[in-house]
Amino acid sequence: MPTQANFPDPIERAGLALREVLLRLDAYSKKRVQTLDTSARYAAAALRHVQDLDKLMIAVQDYEEAVLACLPSANSEQAQIYQMSPAELLAYREADPVYRLGWMRGHKAGLAQAGQAPDKALRLYAKHAALPEPPDTTTFIEGVRRFLAQLNARYGKGPLPTHTKIAHQYGTV
Image 1 (tube, rainbow, N blue to C red):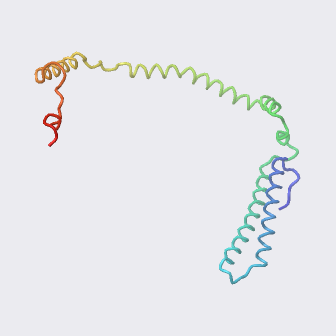
Image 2: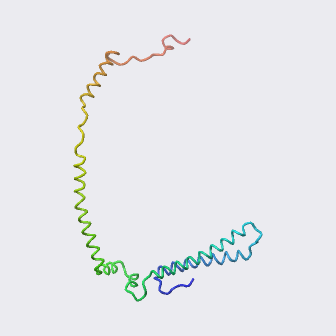
Image 3: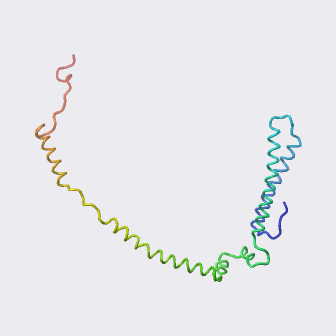
């Protein structure tokens, strides 16, 4: 895979590392294929792996060419963006009138949205403010009192009698 001189440094380093690993794998697999026993049951799979590795190397080369085509040319202003620090890049972008216009529109939209947030909360409150009346607790309390009165009439006042075991009254038989 030929390397291009006008790649930015991070892309160049990553591409070089990928090519080194792929070339080592390619050399190893081709050496194994040369000593491969064609009558072995895994021979067909090994050959497919070598073919897949060749296809992978071609795909990586195509990907590198696509990345190179997407990068700006060396003589354009965009090429210097890759060497700028974050502060320099921000100053460069803020000087751009199109970037500034987008920032102004976004800032105005954010202010409008912040103004709408309390309005939305107030509308939701007004929608759910008319809550139903709480249940009448006096009827519940009266029902509990009637039930306790029935229990008192049925069992009398005081604790409920406990069951005693028959074996304790008559002894063991």
